[in-house]
Length: 264
Image (tube, rainbow, N blue to C red; front, side, top):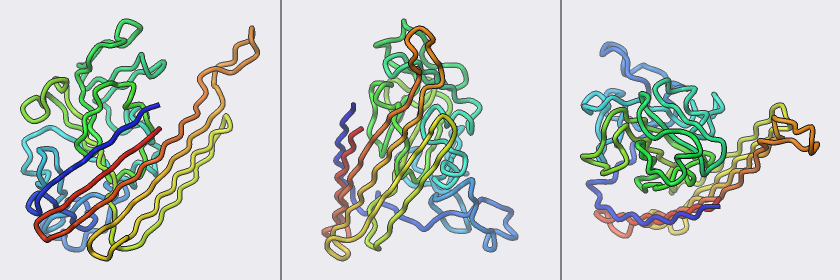
């Protein structure tokens, strides 16, 4: 079980909430480019440019001097990439190994931390951040993605901006923010081995144009994939549950206050 609480205070200059993105195309047809399922709900700048926050500020991806990939929430849902392990199917340079939360490791380009029983307690070389909050232990990062807007995978050393434990790279997970427009999402997935996954989120204003809330929850269950003939039980089952809540307060045009917490 893990509990995370984050408090973010930022001025208007550092807060950007653009509309959804369209993929970058040639200059001649950028204005008419349709939305891409692979890019999903990413931010958009002028002319259809992809806007990211890899350097802790909003920039177009073409101006960021970092080897990186961006995956939107739509692509995550369509491909079934609901955690870091599944994310490796979309990012060939990202490797994630786990026999249990305590013995897990994330590598980028083959660099990071060794995998095995000996890595219990070893600090990682790939930093994992959720809404700019660092998850110091890999065990706390083996959660299911809930209400995710986009994921940025930064390849190569990122210590200048992110500090230690990012010698191989960083994974930035950005969740959807509370909205002043009422909205709700429901997602249900089933599969073999009695796999079932349900996700739901709801958002809306508490005080119009001043205070908004967002609540989301996720449940993932699956039978074990390895049968122990001695005990008659199945091993490697999944039973993940998580909830997340966010409050967004905008008292003035120059001040934003966000409070978020998750439990799983």
